[in-house]
Image (tube, rainbow, N blue to C red; front, side, top):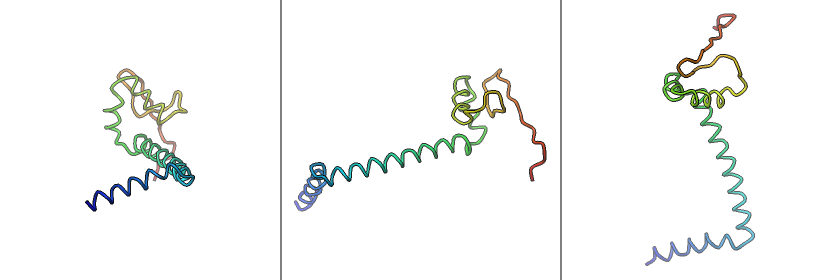
Length: 104
């Protein structure tokens, strides 16, 4: 019975926030923070896909069709129109960039 009363009080307390001016403030703060966190999560996911994924995994996932290869290229290298790429579908020319000086 005590558990039921505690749960009921919590539900009423939390739902009452919607009927007060402070409830609106809390909701706006949660929206802003949630939007920021979602943006950071997406940015981290793109970094993993474009920078941290093993080349073999990228080829296996995105190199199986021209559409997927172009989607990967547009996501990870959006400003390259005719430059070096990591992956490509069968028949697509893959260019390699040769470093001018050895990297130490």
